[in-house]
Length: 113
Image 1: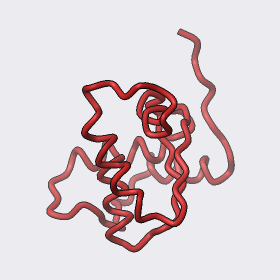
Image 2 (image 1 turned 180 degrees about the vertical axis):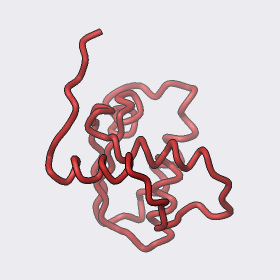
Image 3 (image 1 turned 120 degrees about the vertical axis):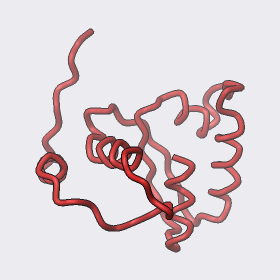
């Protein structure tokens, strides 16, 4: 999340809606819970970066509702890149299918554990 915000700053974005599937991180950023020591530095970095935003909204979403971002994060971890941000993605049928379903408002049902 911190790297994504940094990339958005680098491209000049100033109005953001940030969704994340880690509820603890979202609640910590929103000040709803005591920040666990393991993520205090990350949360502090995020707070310092968003001071320059005109509008920044953080929302929790379940992973099933965040599949495109999940795919991009996994893809990003699998490549060697010299820059933080790139607008080019490979032609990948799975990713295109995720984007189409997301655009149509389709989501996967959450499975009960």
